[in-house]
Image (cartoon, rainbow, N blue to C red; front, side, top):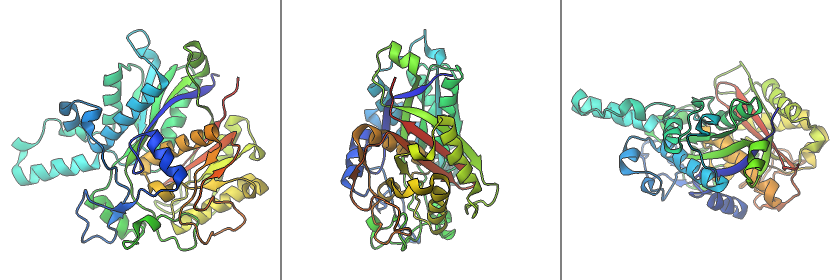
Length: 411
């Protein structure tokens, strides 16, 4: 089977409007979490989150196009543009059928759906946009990307809650491995900073309520954690077969060496206390890569800052990696970005690729009292480490588990 390599990536996050800006903020240990300004929150228990600020759709698309696109799709489109530009990948009529798009999202265009429902209720059916169904479709981001770049191979959406972005990358890598396509753009996008989403997650007591100090609210693996922080953004990668990338002289950033996905089949919001699904996903991804626990040099943890997830993940890391977990850095970039939901796994996989390329591991902010002092959670400040193999964990509501293993590319 073909080896799968990464030749470009793009991101739109609360930390910046590109991979470069996002990574610089991560390495600097800067939080992107603040009081929310784009939604009315005065009567909500949580009034902060990770907003994308300064984003101008006109910099990436025509006004008519942006009007029919939900913010989640706009973020995905911009991230794809950055990834294609970095990869220097040109798709035309000759090779378009050998390219694919797979964009994951946990909830898709919820803000557009809410807007169109409000118009229908307040002004009647004659005022509803003819693009309402398009804007409200979870495949809208993938379709817009395929239209713009002439991609005529498989173009799809995937939804597995907070594992969506990682699943999109893993499944697209399988397309390439099995010869379905030679190249694909894959990742995740999300924008659910709406009153409904904030209210329901708040009522489920899943969100942090540190309204007096938003930047300190996301505190993965800290004893004083009180919930996750809702955020928005996108992360996409250009994936290619090694043969295709080398033939066109592309610069290779890293290799997608392994992937596995499992389901807990246990509870809608709580992880299986035995960790069986999470552990199976980690073991499966390592086996898929032909690697063992001793090969792992860094873990970008799911690390949501919720009571049950963080402890369950640490327990599972001990079970799968053994003593290795106390020898390597384990950090959660959600401490800076907040939880990007369907985009989280993709942005975090990009962070793994950058750690491999730079030898710098991003920190876990706000980890003052670690739940396991034997583990190096990279508290507060980035650290230098030689990272050849990185594991990226993504676990979602509904019991979805997806794990990616990235490796330094070598012939």
